[in-house]
Image (tube, rainbow, N blue to C red):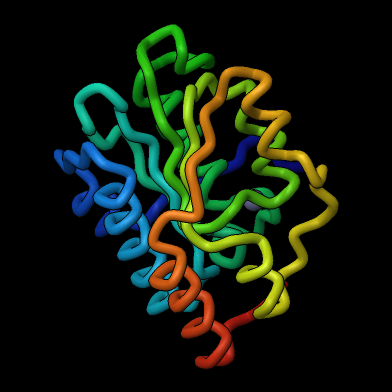
Length: 182
Ligand SMILES: [Zn+2]
């Protein structure tokens, strides 16, 4: 029986994100979409996310979908980015360290929606909509209709869709090249 698990993002992504500063939702989304594009080239799920410091724009972590390479159904981009940010800042609740935003290339699925409140981010911005994701066949699982309100009630600001056309285009490209839909 295994007692240890390992998850990682590609080294090249870490190098790209290191030192990145993006102070606007559009700027952060452009970066995240480019990471999702690179993940499509790697034949991995067409999703990326990052955690940024809202005050300085500094990129704290970068995540991409690693479900196929890690053989782990929970290794979604948002989860990778949140876990890496928490490890980076040595803090389970990011709100204790500052004001952080989760920028994700697509509206979170039910799993990632559930992970947002406990992460301590004060804001979330997304690119493609749930409909864009489902249009290429991904199962997003049930998510409350009023998901946005539910997060805002917990003082998490939601922005999106941001750069939706570009974000949705990455999903389309993945589908066109015959990407694995799981
Ligand atoms: Zn997810």
